[in-house]
Amino acid sequence: MTKPHETSTILLVAALLLLRGCAPSSTGQEARLELAAVPTVVVSMPAAASIAAPTAVAANADVLFVEARQDDADSWTFTVTVAHPDVGWHDYADGWDVVLPDGTVVQPVKDRPFTRLLLHPHQTEQPFTRSQSGITISENVTKVTVRAHDLVAGFGGAEILVDLAVDGGPGFVVRR
Image 1 (cartoon, rainbow, N blue to C red):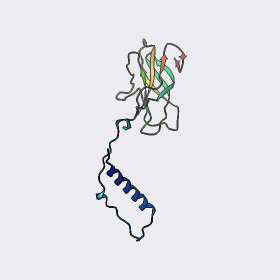
Image 2 (image 1 turned 90 degrees about the vertical axis):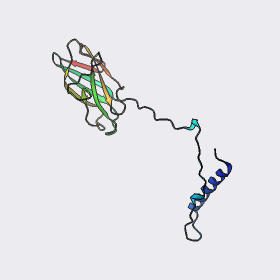
Image 3 (image 1 turned 180 degrees about the horizontal axis):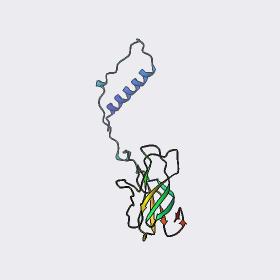
Image 4 (image 1 turned 45 degrees about the horizontal axis):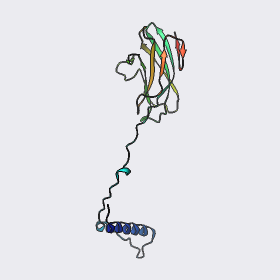
């Protein structure tokens, strides 16, 4: 807490600075303020006025539509439409996955973080559609989940459950 004389000094210095900035010098020379003569004041903020940490960004890379095309017995091509408010290289949808019921992510290209890696932002192309072939899914797997990834917030946007045993459903179509 500041003492009354410190508050008076602070107010006086502030008033002088304001007046000095508004009034011309009578001598034509600039006046100098000796800051060393001003006492140092430490003001502490009450706990309630502390600055809150930024809140987490909600994942917003949404899968809008999936086409699953069977190429042979256990090989598929997925064409996936994703919507994300890409703003540039620092925040964009950077991949999508085909996830098996046991949680395994199908990765047709080794050493890539996603089933389909997206290498650049799509600011002017929303929503956008990209395909990936060579997705191996065993014949006994009938359902997969397709999800998209946001560079900033990760997974958590809209996903689509694709039933490979039917011709289509909400948000997907299957071609054989």
